[in-house]
Length: 130
Picture 1 (tube, one colour):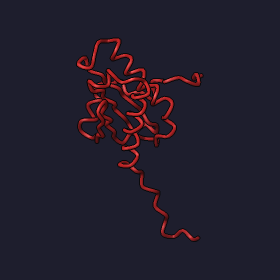
Picture 2 (cartoon, rainbow, N blue to C red):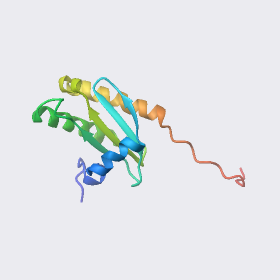
Picture 3 (spheres, rainbow, N blue to C red):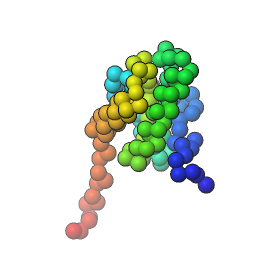
Picture 4 (tube, one colour):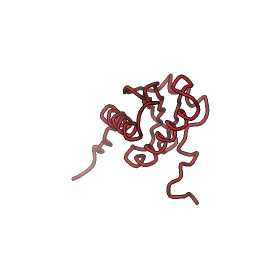
């Protein structure tokens, strides 16, 4: 049984080959602190992977950024359409952001994603009688 605030492995991207697929099939939106790369998923649910390079800061800083990104995604994943994979890449300025700034930055990126990757409505069958 899952805890109500759990972040299970089924919603995380963990394997290197899955991250490499983003370079071939993904599209990106940028902000001053993060890059959101997205691609169509194949697992019937949205998943997220987070990358924070050593260039961003030491282990404490990198882990803080990852915790904040996970928390944002956990709280807002209901608003994300299913069947999308996301890769959040932190840039160096992200190390100086407060929690509120991080949340605002990620919200802006996911809003950009929503505007760009609008899912087309299902086609109405030709023989459908109204």
